[in-house]
Image (cartoon, rainbow, N blue to C red):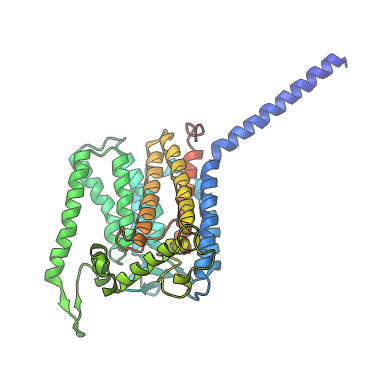
Length: 406
C-alpha cells in the first residue's frame, strides 16, 4: 500500500474515533448535569461532617443510620433519574391517592407510632416517616395538576378546583398533626400555582383567605378551650406547644418563660458563641453538654455555627446557593411545563426549609421543627432529598433542550 494511502487511512480512522468519542461525551453531558452533582456532593460531605459531630455521645442517634439513609437515597435517586418523568404527567389523581395513602398510613393500627403527641411514624422493622416520602408525590401531583392548564390558570372555577385539590395533602397531614411538613406541602403548592400561570388576583385572594383562616383558628380555639384535671388549659385546634412557639416568636423578650423559649435561647447562645471561625469540629459545648435540644435534627444549624463560626455558615449558604442556582438554570432551560414545574416546586421546597430552619434558630421565624436539607439527621429526610435530586436529574436528562448552558 502506498505511503500516502496509508496516511489517509490513518487520518480517517483517527477522525472516526474522535467523532465517536465526541458523540459519547455529548451523550454523557446530556444525561449528567455535572454542576448539580457537584453541588449535592459538596453539601452532602459538609452535612455528614456536621451530623457526625452532632450525634457524638448521644445514644438516641446513630450516624450509621444516617449513612444508611444516604445509601437508600442514592438508590432512589438513580431510580427517579432513570425514569422518564414525562410519563407521570397524566397521573395526577393516582399521585394524589398515593400521597393520601402515605400521609394517613401512621393511623393504621399495629404499625402506627405516636411520638411527642404526633402520629407521624410507622414501624415496619424500622421507623419510617411516610409524610416525608409524600413530599415526592406531592411535588409530582402539584406539577402534573397545574401543568394541565398549559401555563394559563385564569378561570375562577378551575382555579378553585385546583386549590381545593392541592389542600388535600395538607388537611391529611394535619390529622397527625405535623404542622411543619404541612407548611412544606403548602409552599410546594404555592410555588406551583405561581409558576403555573395562576392569575395574580386569585393568588392574592387565596393569601388573604389563608390569613383569615389562621385568625379564625385562634378565635374558634378560644371558644373550644377546656381545663384539664390538672388545671392546665388545652385547646382543640392548635396544640399547646404550637401556641407556645408562636408566643415565643412574638415575645422574645420573655424567652425563659416556656420550654420553647429556652430552646431558642440556647440556640442563639450557640450561634453567637461560634464567632468568626468557630470552636472547631466536635468542640461545641451547647450540644455536647446537653443544653441545645434536638441538636442533630431541628437545631443542627446551631452546631454548625458554634463549631465553624460565621465562615462555616457562609460556606453552607454558598453551597445552597450553588445548588439552587444550578436547579434554576435547569428549570429555565426546560422546554416542558410539567418538568419546569417539578424543578420549581423542589427549589421552592428547599428554599422554604432552608430559610425556616435557619430563621427559627436565629429567632427570625417561629420554631416549627423543619429540618435543614442534606444536613439534619434523619434517614427518611435524607432519602427524600436524594429523590428530589433524582427528579431534577430526570428533567435534565430527558429534555433535549436542556443540555446547553447549565
